[in-house]
Image 1 (cartoon, rainbow over the protein chains, first blue to last red):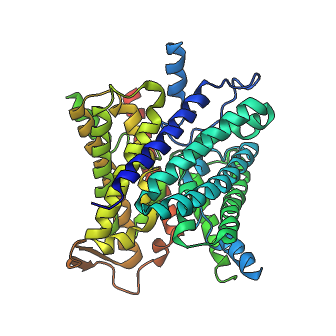
Image 2: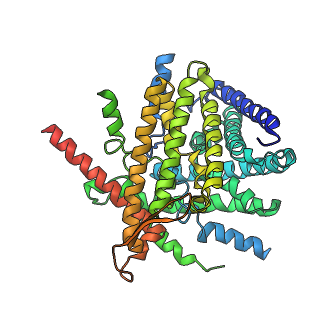
Image 3: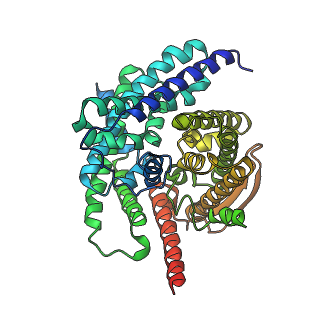
Length: 64
Length: 191
Length: 212
């Protein structure tokens, strides 16, 4: 076992929670007016975790 | 000064991140259909790489090395990049709709981009000092932008040409990339 | 039978590399030799299966808004472990793959499957999906590396990554007649383009037959 495993785990949780908080805040910040229907005309890949994937917009509309 | 200049030229032309090192192909194929979206994408990439490099370099030498946990490098860097992108997107959304129109929409594409992670890892692997790190982190996305803009102009012309059915879309784009790689390999030995 | 269809779809119909263009960066760089293609394929299968299983086990506990950060942490930890294992047990594979082991983190396939499948399905289905997608990816890597190695160096060989002993090494094209273009980056792009176009032609033909 590496010596500093405790500090590593604590450090990882700190940095992951900073990211999680910022991700949540960003998700809640609305897009500026006039920019609602901008989309990158990107059909390059089907990365479904990319926020600009079409499947995500359908999910969000059903959600609201 | 000469060393910085040669490092800059090497990163842009000789070891071009897209054509010689095969990184960043996903946005390269996805966003290069139109010239203005290609330009917006490259500006966003330059901004994210420079910012994330500085942050991850700082965190590596000020937190990871003193604590002796260098093996957390990969987890740290990917989280730093993602945090930086989220933070930037939030700030741009709130304070500058014009900037959001220009490059904010490309920011989510850059989080899982090979180029950003590779530059941050290279800064550590090559043991750069601070100035070299800045030059390298600025030069690599400039190389990306150069290739992306050239590629977008070629692709705009390709849309009106007669291409075999099987090659339409991405395969013909890859053939163009092969020819561009051949052209850029002539720069080897420049510096 | 739905599971078998999903499993087989990863090979030709929804081939992640040539059909969906995911994970291209490592494909172009790794496929110079059969050894590195197999090594990379096995690493991706390992990370994919374990990340699918872990995320599927955690799927009811993670709040919906922060699932992407959690996925990233899980995948990055797994890749760090895999990198350390490869560095320890197989130095030749480590130097052949270089920094592309680290780039498995941002490999689109893993994030994509975690989001699309493991977040909603149970553990066994997610593990099967991981194996299927991983095998499809390895199959594409092996196909491309066979072409590049045979045409580029004339020989095809395989060696044990743990002990570096050669398992077989067959010279197919006599030396002096090989096309060394396929070893460097230009050949990578061209081989990829041809294989992608072949898959697109096959899919076009199948959809035309289905319409009639």
